[in-house]
Structures are given as C-alpha cells and as structure tokens.
Length: 242
Image (cartoon, rainbow, N blue to C red; front, side, top):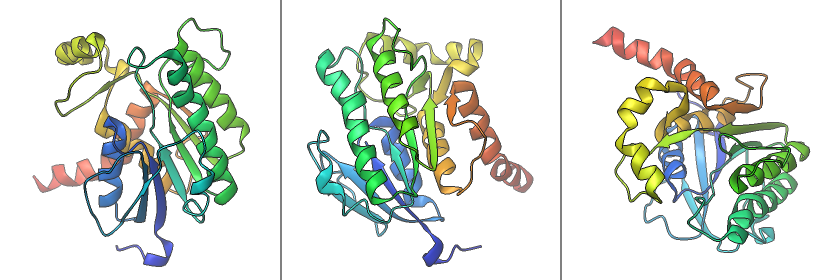
C-alpha cells in the first residue's frame, strides 16, 4: 500500500558522508514512508535523487543558520562523529559533544515534535568516570540529549560496526577486527553489528511514529533484536516465495 504524500516523513540526516550515515541515506531514499530527505553535510555527496535536498554546512559549532531548513521536520538521524586517535582530543570532544548539542538545540527549536536518533557507542559513560575519552564524551552528549526533552529520543550504542563494503580502515584495531570478523561474529555475536543493519534500525525507529520499545537506549544486543524483529516479515515473505 502506498503512503499518501501528505503523511510521508520528512527526515534530516547529519553525517551522510560517513560509513553508517551513508547507509542511512541510501535506506532513507528507498523508504516508501519517507517523502523527503535533507542531508546536512560538510562536503558534497555527489549524488542526486528526487527526495534529496543537500545542505552544505561546514561549521557545526554554530548551527543557527540551519534553523529554517530544520523547520517542520518529522525526524532526524545524527551520525556525525570522529574516530579516536585520528583527531586531537580537543577536536574529538568538539565533534562528539559540542556538534551534537548544537545541532540538537536548533532542531528542537525548529521542529519541537521531531524524533531524534543518535549514534553513540558501546561503553558510553554518562557518569563521566571512564578513562576512555570517547566513552566520556559520548556519555556527556547522551546526558544533554536526554535533558533536551525530545518527544522521541533513541540512543544507539553499537559495539564493533562491520563496514560491509571495503574501505580504508581508520586504524590498526579496525583493520584487525575486519580481518577476523567471521570468527569474532561467531564467538561474540552480540558484540558486532553490520553498518547497513544499524542504519536501518536508526531510520526505522524514527519513521515508525511510535516507540518500538519503552527503552530509549539501545545496546548492541538490542539493536540486533530490533533488526531481526523489524525485518522478519520481509524475510519470511522472501522465504515463502523461494
């Protein structure tokens, strides 16, 4: 059944040039319930699509200029981030905490009813006690988002995100994990998630117009369960046609 244009979702994506954000963008453009996709990017995507509106914005420390573009949006998926060790600590905190808070502030003011899906990470520490800077910063960002009173806020804490498609890995740890992924997945299934599965979960939960679960914080195990439950009907249909 086709969704009437008047009831289709208007979705904003931040971080669409990244690994997970790229899959979010692809999935959103194909999604029948989504009528428009506004991608806030720091560099051109290099693609065109009838649903897609691309907004270049280079300074996420100040998102005030995005207020008009963020007006009357139904949902947002925020995937902007940086890898530990690839940028100085000051920049890591700015990207992880400051950029998230600033974007959320403007979105909340322009579209107070919008749902928000945030890419955090396994081990995020809202107490601020962790020795890992990434964990402290993600926890700090989560705390501010939870206090922002979004009507529907979904925080995703994936463990190892499998890239699916070949890419230049950011550091040795990621190269190593990609190399042993089949074994790692078999031994520790709840410590891995495919990038495309994570992207689908982050989109589906905000376009459903209802909470999939009472919890607003999804650990890796929860994300895997969401992917299975949300896409089981489709998988069953395909199995029946085989």
